[in-house]
Image 1: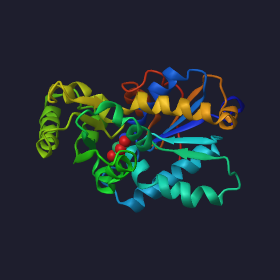
Image 2 (image 1 turned 90 degrees about the vertical axis):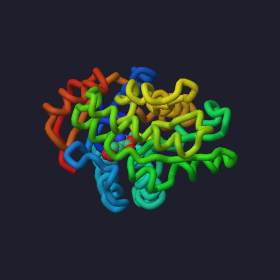
Image 3 (image 1 turned 180 degrees about the horizontal axis):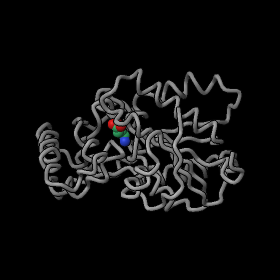
Image 4 (image 1 turned 45 degrees about the vertical axis):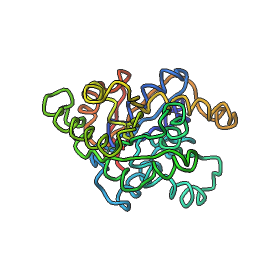
Length: 277
Ligand code: DGL
């Protein structure tokens, strides 16, 4: 194990999407070390069963722990929706290291929603898995019972991003359709949550089809602020995170592809290794 990077914060996604979160975290916390793991060989997770997403996510968390992380961020809504709670409640207690933590991206995105909506009507765009889990409405209603939540699954959007088609005209068809669908469910929606870490790459086209008065929330900055706040509130965890500004990237698929394509999401990618889960 690399001595300098053995206490890096682990960041996980099914593929490239989590890089949109990591990029913002690095901006806010440039001193910290990060190990990013993309399960590119098995992406996308969005249409997979609960069991498959749980198994894959758990394997990835174990790998990041093995690489030395004490803290892992699931920078993936699908994994946060389908696997996080079981990992926290059933897997972590079996370890003899009670300080280890796994955090997700849904809770921080939900906490700040009250600051954005005036109408108390919000829409969530996500993968089929995230929408089917109902995690967003459940979490939003715990904090804001008065907010009405509509959801729309956008099963093509991750594929557009993963296949580098997100700037092409074909993408407009799917994006326009999904936006029309969600807004037709409730004409009072004034806030749309991009509940998938791949979607920030589609932001220009999403804006094109969304009326100007509607706020569009991307998760990168929200999750970065929430992580910084978490480490401020947990100095014992902060002390365990190494700070040498080292960023390492692991993929279950081709490192060459990861570097080439991942650079569209985040310009810090140079050190990529293939890894087996
Ligand atoms: N980036 C992931 C998310 O935030 C999911 C993409 C997928 O694997 O379907 O949900």
